[in-house]
Image (cartoon, rainbow over all chains, first blue to last red; front, side):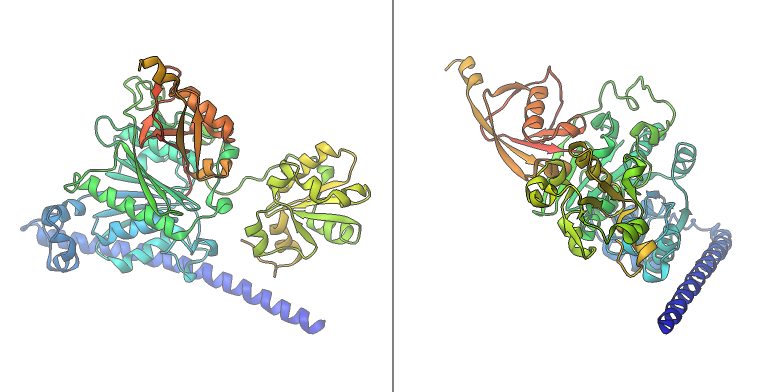
Length: 453
Length: 95
């Protein structure tokens, strides 16, 4: 026992030390990139002075450019003119996640002049399967810094600017103003309305991509006379309880990869005036990854009474988008609090007081999640089967015993409350509890070897 | 055949569900019978929402008929044909 404690202590100590080192490392990386940026600026200034007699660096291609971009330079509709235009264009990517990683990668590799990255978040392990610029070494680092490091390895000749912040009504216009083309690679509804309105106000084209589970969508807003905006298509935001995020619904990395790559393609076409084809404006591309089918939906023209893009708009300055949508501007879950306190158990109370007594522990997650990890004495009763009362038949015998408590459990303690509330409506006299914080709390407070996802 | 006869003819349309609507309906696609080929887009959306558990999202759906956006309004009179494809497209916000 004593030996075990000693090992536990040492493990804990090592974990803390490693975390400290990572923090340290991240701070140094940041300082390094600051200094490198400074150095680059100085070099550029020196170069600019040298080149003043000839043309400046974005007016002509040097030998490195010609070698690096040769495979796209020989494209009939691209050419030297296209390459120079790309070099003179500044792109802003909002959200350095599953969409932002591939789109930034292709834009930068293609030789865009200036690339701005916006994200407030830090890298964590659950990002890696789809956010392919971040690596094991960058856990805990700001996503924008981690992405910048990876991108500089791909193409050191482009200027990358990091905006480590949550885009909001206060800062959006000032940031967007500095760029020519904006890519919406965000993960939430509030920021999508914010970007739409800001791009309408500044008259910037907006390349909007989204992905969830096996589905993707893509369109270009604010490009051309008749092109509708996001509000023309969706004048009212969806009810918050109908919006699923990647954390809850899941998403395959290859799906965000497809949509993110297409965003880069459309951004390049927008910058180059169509590239001899047709920009995806006024059309919505729907990607059904399950069947690997693409559909192109011909969209409406501008809504004559659109709140933001009509000739007489109601919205002339940015509003509070979290309030407008009733949702936070992130894909992090909000903690629900709908169950009375007396029906809520902490993980400690469950372990120490309830576990020995007669009860049924119902884990209300989806079967696919239950398969990942579960408490040994739990039964998988998906929330849907509680809300549609099919659990009544399944637990007919157990439910006859009124002494037996009913305990509800889920990943983070939201769905378990919905389930408990529904069961309490039918059995107001019974002992029905949910476990606060769910399996996440179990990991943090009871057993840190229990996996979290 | 007079125009009126055509309008009252029963037809079957094909409904495709995307994203959240697929989850709510529990289906990828369905064949849906209509009493008349003439119907307003608002009515059509109402019928589909009621039949496939889409009430919660019906205010934010794009309805596309044969891959073309359809304005939702009681004034939007549709004349559908047997086999027309109606796509139900809710917004997607993840990334």
